[in-house]
Each structure stands twice: as structure tokens, then as C-alpha cells.
Image (cartoon, rainbow, N blue to C red; front, top):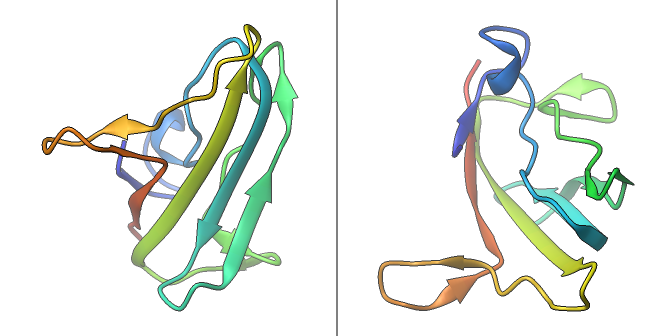
Length: 101
């Protein structure tokens, strides 16, 4: 998904959490428009991401806006996640998510 609504809606849209399986290592980060790191996680449970971003920074809800996510991941077989494939054929390990309040 590229949007989420903390505190409202169904459980699948309250937290921005990547979907993956068979992870060995993983790093998930959220940045604001000015490049400030707001959230970071390396937590894995049962080879899947264990944490997602709840739309807050240091316990304070962030404003409705577009935020940047970055992900680095290594799978159990040692391969590295190449990223999302864009329409132009390039792969990206970052993208945007819209926080809706």
C-alpha cells in the first residue's frame, strides 16, 4: 500500500508495514520531507517484518503528509532484495507513503 490511516479504518491500514517472507536481515526506515529519520526497524519475527510505522515520531502523531520509506533486505538464501520494479524497468529500494489523518 502507499497510504495508511493511523487510528482509523481496518487493521491493515492503521500501520505502514512492509510485507515480506524468508528474511535473514532487514532494515526499514521512514523519513520526513526534509530527510529527518522518524522511524527505523530491523525486527524480524518468523522471517517476516515484526514492526510497522504507526505514523508517530517519539510518541507524537506526525501530520498528514507524504513520507519516504527505504528498505534493505537479505533473504535466507543470501540473495539481496533488488527493490520494486518501476514502469521504466529500474529498481528502487525507496518510495513514498501518504499518512492520512
